[in-house]
Length: 353
Image (cartoon, rainbow, N blue to C red; front, side, top):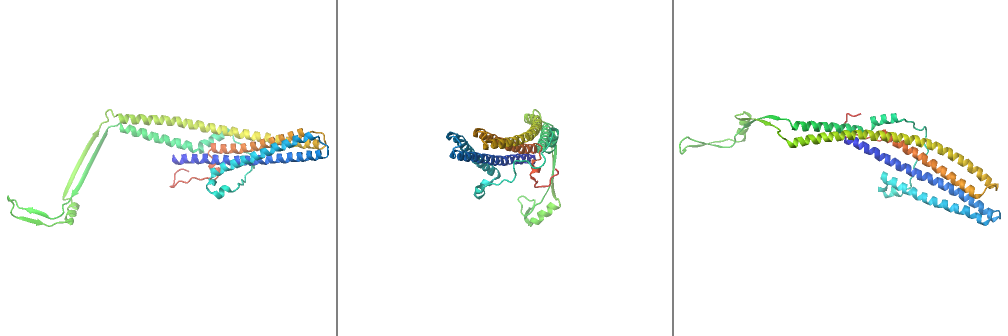
């Protein structure tokens, strides 16, 4: 039971660390998108500034691009500090804050938010079946019910009559000098018979002075309130653990269902967000050509740039949501330790596979 509970705790800890990892990736990718938006606003502002110097732009129209550039720079500053907060939380989770040298180093996360390879496809029945076979909570609950059965049997035994038979046998020996007196009164002749430890051991080994004993005890538990209370407590504990077992089954099955739903939602959202990003990119290119030809205003161009930034942020969030949903599925099915090659070894050989 301790091993199963420990395995469950390790799986939860890994899920938390992986979630913090993807939060850092999300903050990093979001910062890249915001910085790209600043570069676009800076290019638009430089274009308007040149147009203003050449007299092709009214004086008051420069404020639109300048204010938009300042707003996006504020978003960059906020994104940088959000990234630092996410990194600090991740460092605490992995223990990097314990070493000042490691805590001061910049983090370089190798995995990107965009999934690599084929996306996972899993239905609810498969997820529940895997959870039943791999989640350590089920084994821990089964062992707890075995303990409850033993406690109930023990409490029943305490209420039964108890007949015990005990026997004893011992051998004695006498050592040291012995005084031998005659039978006269008062004794006249006194003799000393020498002896020692060897004599005593010889008497013990030869069973010269044996002693036997036997005891028969009968205990009748008449109105044994303590035993009755112990039996009642044991039966209540078993019923409670039966309800806990059913609750554990239901909660894990619900967790598996929700994880599969989140995975499917993330996959659909990621596909839709990619299409929206691509279409917005094409729309921005069209609006940029119109603006360069003087057929579009700076307001429309800046608004389209903002739409592209929002579409790219939505795509990043959808990709990170897929990674988090994938981790939730692996945790719900009990496969998270295998995914990250974590092994829990017993100090002694175990019969469990």
